[in-house]
Image (tube, rainbow, N blue to C red):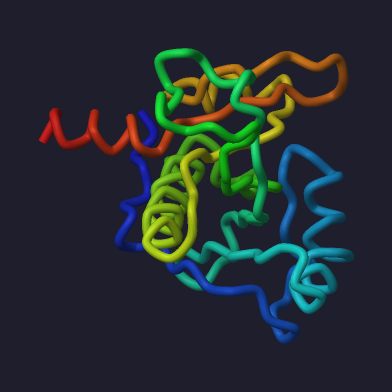
Amino acid sequence: MITPIPFDELQFVLLRAEHDLSGFHSSEPELDEFLRDDALINQNNLISVTRLVFWKGNLVGYFTLVNDSIEVRAVEECDREESYHFRKYPALKIARLATHNSCERFGVGRSMLRKIFSISITLSHYVGCRIITVDSKHSAVDFYKKFAFKQAIRMPGETVPLYLDLKNALQRISRES
């Protein structure tokens, strides 16, 4: 049985030029390439922000966030805000999320989502942020659905657009506490 890595043992730090990323290998080479070749450039150009996740000094994961929006019609009726009269909801997008191969199934992905939820709640105190979106690889859809992400309008292609209504998630958490 695999014992999950406790959340409080993980360090979440912003990507900086001095970080050594050469040893990071996930199950998706495209995600590894992004981290090594593009993440810092995008961050310096204010396009995205990448946080690295360390455990005992080892890089075990990373995630990248960007601003987004989602068409109201892509959201289920039960998640819509009746008084909202615009075409799109403001959103935070999980642009990339990857766990090191050696740490898969140790709860690192779950912890990264927990951190992303925390960031989105903080963000929502400063700007509108109703929805968390992700264009999920087909292989990761079940992972996100475990955390109450719902499938948005399905577009043909490599990814599956999913979303989580932050307001409803917070209400659900309050009821469960």
